[in-house]
Amino acid sequence: MELAARLVEALTAVVPVEVEPDGALTVRYEGTFASLRTVTIAENIEMVSVTQVLAWDLPVNADLRKRVAAQAQSTMLGTVTLVESGKKGDAMLRYNFPGQGLADGALQTLVLMVLAGGADARRAIVD
Image (cartoon, helix red, strand yellow):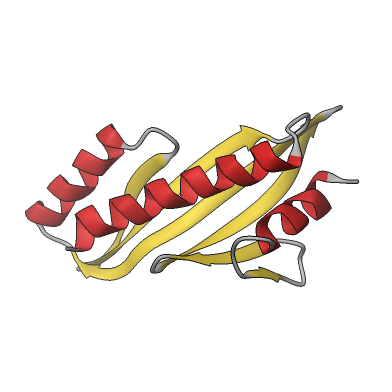
């Protein structure tokens, strides 16, 4: 079974998953939403790419930048960033990992760990 199909099967057992027309998956998790894609980067190397929106349209100021920077340093599975657009910003988490060769349980666990880390970062940024 291809990685994308395995990812859908592994995740639908534990979280709501929407399969988008372009094949991406949208997952909602503890106040966040994430887009997951599988990408072949070389022969026999398929990656899972996770982009999790932690919070959006936040008023950008020094305190927000400080909270996002603290999460960027403390988050183990992923990179937390602030995408600024004028006076507003979106907090994001991005993480890529090789999915080929992972058992379904390990695939599910790793994705859930990434999403949980993002949800923790969200709470630290917006609370």
